Amino acid sequence: MKTSLSVLVVEDDRWLAEQYSRVLTKVGYEVKVTSHVLAAVQAIDDFRPDAIILDVLLTGSTAFTLLHELQSYGDTGAIPIILCTNLASELSLEDLRPYGVRRIIDKTKMVPDDLTIALRSVL
Amino acid sequence: MSAKAGEHERFLDGPLSDGLSSLVAAAHELKSPLALIRQLSLMLEDNELGLVEQKRMLRQISLTSEQALRLTSDLTRSVRLSDALFTLEPINPQQLCEDIVSELAPYFVAHDRDVRLAPRKHPLLLVANRDLLRRIIMNFSDNALHYTEDNTTVEIHIGLLNGGKTVRLGVRDYGPALSVNALDSLRGRLVDSTTTIYARPQSSGLGLYIASQFADAMNGKIGVKRHRDGSTFYVDLQASQQLSLL
Image (tube, rainbow over all chains, first blue to last red; front, side, top):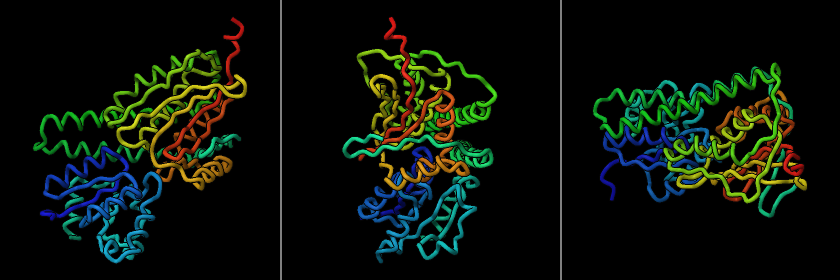
C-alpha cells in the first residue's frame, strides 16, 4: 500500500530524469522513471502513479501515443498529466486537456520548484 | 540494397538540407543540453545538496557541455566544407576507433553504459579524412548513447563489403528499434533537400545531416540498419589498396 503520492516521470534524457527525481523525492513523492512509451505503459500498470510528468519527443513513440493509450481506459484516463517539454511554445493546453494534460511546463524556462508547484496544483 | 533476415537497411545518400533549416535544427538540438545544464546549475545553488551529489551534478554539467560543444564544432566544420579542401589519406580505422572509444568511455560510464570496439583479426585501411571520419563516428556514438538502453554496450564494428572495395564502420545501439515507417521517413527527408533529417522522433536530425555532409566530402555515404533490438548507423568508405600492394 502506498504511503505517499507517486509520480511517473517519462523522460529519455537520463540526467534530466534524475534531476526531476531528485527534486520530487526531496519533497516526499515516490518517483519512478521510464525513458520511453512502451516502458511507461508497463510502469503505469505496475506502479499506478497519481500523476505523470511526460516529455513530448521521446525515443520511439512520442508522448501523443501514450496520451491516446491512456484515454482508452477509464482508470488511466483520469491520471493527471504534466507535459514537460522544449516544445511548450508550440502546444496549446486547451487542445490537450481532453487527453488528460493539466499543465505544460517549458523546459527552457522552468526552475526546479516548477515541478512540485505543478503537481500540487493537480493532485 | 541488402538486408539480413529480421533487419531492414536503408542508404542515406540524398542531397543536403538548406541553411535555414540547419540553423533551426541547431537551435533545437542545443536546447536539450542547455536546458539540462540550466536545471543542474539552479539545483546546485541549493546548499542542501551533499558533496557527492554536487560532484556528480558538476560532472554531468561538464560532460553535457562537451557534448554540446562537439555539436557546435561539427556544425561550424560542416558550414565550411565547401570552402576547404580535405586531404584524403589511407587511415587505419581500428586505431581511429580505439581512440574514440577511449575518449568517449567516461561519458558512457557516467550514463551507466559502455562502448567498445568489436575485435578484428586483420587490419584494414580506408581512404578518408581523419578529422571528418572521427567526427562521424563520434556523432553516431553520441546518438547511440542517447538511444541505447541502460547497462548495455554500444559496439563499433569495422568490416569489409563489396569484395573488399568498401569499408563499413558501424555503431550499434540496443534501444527501441526504428519503425519501418521511421526508416522510410528518414530516407525521404534525405531526398527532400528542403527539410532536415529526422533520425528519430525527438531528434532534429542535425547530427545525421552533418555526418551525411562529412561522408559526402569523402566520397562515402551513411546509412542505417534496423534490428529487432536497436539500430546500426554506419558510414561506407572506399577501402585503400595500399595493404594489397605491400
